[in-house]
Length: 438
Image (cartoon, rainbow, N blue to C red; front, side):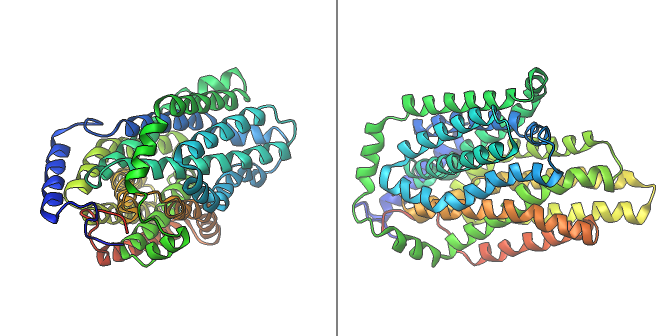
């Protein structure tokens, strides 16, 4: 990818424009100064996340009503992630051929419809099938939404835009479980229909507020010189910055979405010998820190560089996993002095929340820089596949290590893996001031 501007503006003009935008970013809060599409996509993310937050805790419980094993109940969750991973390349091609708006809206309708039908499932296989179809729609939404977000903002806004988008997911993810208990009390099938309603609402938001004319104009601005999509991907894969973003997303998916979400609740109950509520407090601590740091992290990526923000995120993630390893070691080594293990656990979750704030914005901003402001469905899809792959492999690897050894082995393994992306980030070039289309 070229690092020289190709829009006719001289380097000095581009530099001064970037400086002015950077200054505005420091002064403006939240969504001020960002394109309207960022607010729309953030609202859509909130609708999706709050519905999923209501459904997720009830999903394995509903699966168990079909008299299946714990493994089969877990498979209902895994099939969703598996189909997201498998369908990602197709979603990328659809985005490049049909446009983000069509793919995004279609994906939301697919997930909404499949969720509503899943609520009427009469057999376990029906539930698995409809959740798998939902994973396809979810992949379409994620790839197209991120591709659109990165295309409609300027280079010096990408970090903050990604933070706002991630913030929508974060707020929805926190609010969903908070009201999920009320919904489940009505019926074990009710969460499916609430999730479907939230997705239909999100789809309507995209149809009403994402203007086709404006998106077409933005596409015309960057369509000149587009190359074959596979060649674009090959070019991106040779880019050290893209390699760093892929590696970071893979490990983030493995550690944050995979291992942490599957093993930490078990560690709290079996390792720390505490009630399940402590696990909730730990995840709340991570979410609270992430929410506080999310926008400053995006501003750092836009003003001080993607590389620095990525280093903050990757190093914090590795340190957080080290603290989690020490938490289990403290319990095993000190016996009754489990309070130290509890404190280390909460500290580790807060540190990981800090790191997640930077990894929620900086890698996406790098992808936008690599895309150069043009359509990049296949580039975004490959990036998204890394996170899904990590989310699939993380629980399996962690569960195996816990079964064979202990929790500290699983956490230590994750800590070692979390160190690897740091080296990729160190060797990557800064991409903040890249502009133009190759």
